[in-house]
Structures are given as structure tokens and as C-alpha cells.
Image 1 (cartoon, rainbow, N blue to C red):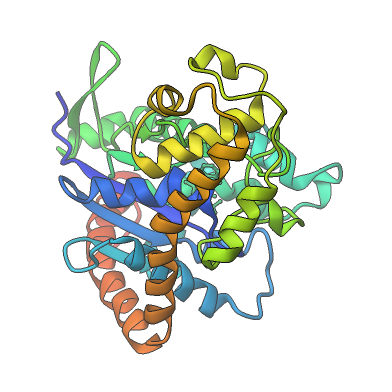
Image 2: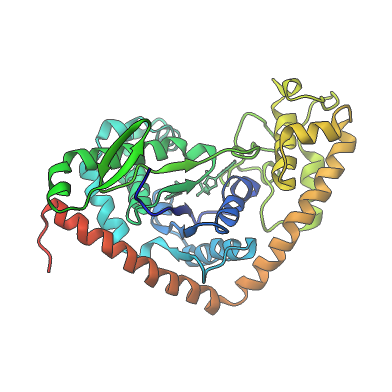
Length: 355
Ligand code: AMP
Ligand code: TRP
């Protein structure tokens, strides 16, 4: 039982090209969830400052992610699409969460450790506090479900920890003000102001790996463009990258067990399953026993069939900057009204003076 209204929230950073991992791990799920849920999809431009403060083309990158959302089929009239920096309540709640969360929690984040590298003292404070802003993005709408790729799991666990600590630390105030909502956490029913958000992770494509190295995830920051399929790649480029993808010399197995210790093979099967909206098992039933020389062309055809229309639509949408900007402006106004409702309660709970 949860008295929270079901609401889906997710975000994507406007940095670099969107790739197949972003599409299968996140955006395709955004599209599926919009059928039966209210959804808010956000281009998290403030988060992108943690990787690179000075951007030449932040505005165009923000528009490009928006275009990818729309080209993939997200409906900005039924749902909300906007860029994070327009709704200042995200930054306001992030500050409060900076005071709720502990430095130790942030220090344990593997993404922070990876991105900060060896010289951790010299990383920006923003990079350390990144998960606090992410928690604020979600909780400023009291969102209940968050679709993301596998790599964001730890950040979502931290979001749950922050919500729980806020609910506990302010439990008396929340009760006095009548702002508590009952929810189930595990077997327990608890009351709190913030929901304990559920991650929506999984399926065959929750973690797509590099086409050049099955032990590394497909990423915007990989120096080799052959490691990823970009959503903007044309049909020839998509086919070429799949043909060049690293594999092993064996035929595909007929059962899932046969993919153990074959990360490149498993990745290509997962990509096929994600694109075809089926399972890895079903792909192996169809292709088990076949060589990569037969499987790769089938995968390339499928990838082109599914991705090329999105790339074309993205280009068409990007040509009309005014339309894209209007979608973000309208989404920002609607999101801002919802976020302000939450923040009025948060300010009351904390005891900040407001009118
Ligand atoms: P980012 O580009 O880092 O903002 O990621 C946007 C979304 O794509 C997040 O939900 C990520 O978890 C997801 N994502 C990024 N890389 C991958 C990948 N290689 N496989 C699956 N999902 C991914
Ligand atoms: N950290 C996420 C990523 O890099 C992006 C993100 C920011 C996000 N805020 C969010 C995802 C809120 C889901 C919900 O992929």
C-alpha cells in the first residue's frame, strides 16, 4: 500500500552523443512507461556542469537530448519534458539534501571514485554532491518510479537513504503538520513526506557494453567512436560498427549458460534482445548454433530498422529550434508549479520562513 500517487521521473545529461546504451537502458523504457503512467523527463543540464563547467554548446546539447526524447516517441503534451536549470527548486532541495546526506555516503559512490580518479581532493564539490542533486530531481516531484540503466543503481539507493533520513529526522514536524503519507517499505508500513523511490532497472539491455571491449560499458566518453552506436549514426555507420564489433571465434550457444565468460557475445545478444523487445533466451533459440558471420548482419539490419528512423526524426526536430525551446519552456512551467508545491511543504517542515 502506498498513498503516494505513482509518478515516473528520469533524467539524462546533455553531454556528448546519445548512444545505444542510453537508448536501450533508459529512453526506450521512458517511452514504454508513458503509456500507463504520468511521467516527467528532464534534461539535467546542471548535472553536466560537474563533468565540464565551460561548455561551448550546452544549449544545443540540451536541445539534442530533447529532440531524442521526442523522436523516440515521448509525448510532451501528455507528460512533462524540460531542462533542469529552469526549475530552481531542484537546486534548492539539493542544498537541503546536502545538509541531510553525509560526506561518507558520497565518498562511497563508485561513479564519484571513477570520475574523480586519483586526485580526489581536486575534484569539484559538485561532483561529490552530484547524487544529492539527483535525489532532489526525483523527490522534488515525490516521484515513485525511476527508470535508469544499471550504472545508476547506487545513486538510487542513496536517494532512498536521503528520503528515509529526511522522513526520520523530521518525523515529528511531518506528523504535526499532517504531511505524512503511509507507504510500504519491505514488510513495514511507514509514514513519511518523501516516497522511498523504486528503481526501474532490468531487462536484457540494462547494461550495454562497449563494442570494442565487453568488460567496459558503452559510454559517451570512450575515445573510440567504434565502441558505441550513436543515435545520430546513419545506416552505413551502424552496419560498419556492428561488423567491426569484437567477438570470439565460437558459434552462438543455444542456452544462456553458454554465454558465461563470453562478454562480447552476451552483449550483442543483449542488444538484439533489447531492440527486438524479446529476451536473450529467445534470441539464442533463434540464432543458437550460428556463427557471428550470420548473426552480425541480422543484428545490423535490426539496428538500422529501429534506429535510423529515430535519427531522421531527431534531425527534423532539431531543425526547428523554436519548437524544441517551446517544449522545454512549457514543460518547465508545469514542472515548476509541481516542484513549488513540494517545496512549500519542505520549507514548512524545516521551519524556514515563507509567505
Ligand atoms: P547519462 O548519459 O549518463 O546521463 O545516462 C542516461 C541514462 O542512460 C541513464 O539512465 C544511464 O543509466 C543509461 N545508460 C548510460 N550508459 C548505459 C549503458 N552502457 N547501458 C545501459 N544504460 C546506460
Ligand atoms: N545521474 C544520471 C545519469 O548520469 C542522470 C540523472 C540526473 C538522473 N538526475 C536524475 C537519472 C534523476 C534519474 C533520475 O545517467
